[in-house]
Length: 319
Image (cartoon, rainbow, N blue to C red; front, side, top):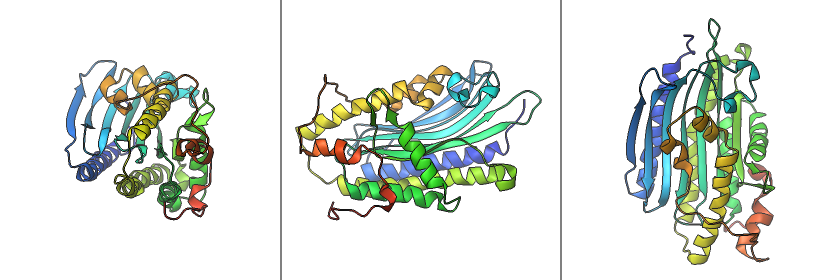
C-alpha cells in the first residue's frame, strides 16, 4: 500500500498535543480525565487505534473529551470526498486530535478544537495528503473581551504561515459553523480549514504540517484565560436553562452538518468516541425567543453574527 510522508512524526505530535491539553485541563478542573484506549482488529472495514480522554461531572467541566484516533480504511466515505470526487473509492489513512468541552458555568463558553491529517492512498500512486482543523467558541452569554482574545490568539497562531490565512480561515469558520435551517451561526467562530496542502514549491508537507501544529499549540492560550475569567461568575437556574436551550443548537449542527461526525459514522468509527462531543443536558422549546433587552437577547443581536473580532476595540473594557 502507498504510504504517507512521515506519518510517525504526525502521530507523535498529536499524541503529545493530547497529553499536554489533558494535563492543563486536569489542573483547571481538579479531577482526572478517564483514559480509554482502543484498537481495531486487523482485516475489518476500519483498522487502527486511538485513545479517548473523557471527563464527566467535574468541578469545572460538566462533560468534555480530548480524543486521539489513527485509522486506516479501504474506501474513503462520502463526507471526505465531497470536495475531492476524483479520490472516491481510494483507501485512506486519517489521524487527529479532536476536543469539545462543555463547562458547568453558563458564563464559560463551550469550545471545540480539532487538528487532523488525511491521506488518500490510490494504488500505485503518490499519496494525496491534506490537513484540516481549527477551533471555535460557542458562548451562551457574550463577552467582547473573550471573543477578541480568542480570535487574536487564532490570528497570532497563523501569522508566521501567511498573513492571508487568518481572514481566509475565519471566513471559512463563519460559513462552516452555520445552522442553515436556523439561519444563525453556532457561536462566534474562530478558524476552520480543510483540504489544506501547500504545493512543494511553498514548503509542501512540512510547511502544511507546521501550520497545523501552530493551530494545535495555540489552543490552551486561546481558551484557558477565558475559562479562568468566567468560571468565578455566579449563576442561577435562569442561566442554566438558557445554556441547555442553546446546547440544542450544538447537537443539531453536529448531527446534521459536521463533517467529522459524519466521517466517523460513515466509516464505521467508534460511536462512543464520535458522539463524545454531545452535551450531557439539552433542552428544546417550540418557537422560543428571548425577551428583548436581556443578556440572552444580546447573544443573538450582538454576538451571533460575523464580526471582525481580532481588530475591534472593546466597548465595555470591564467585561
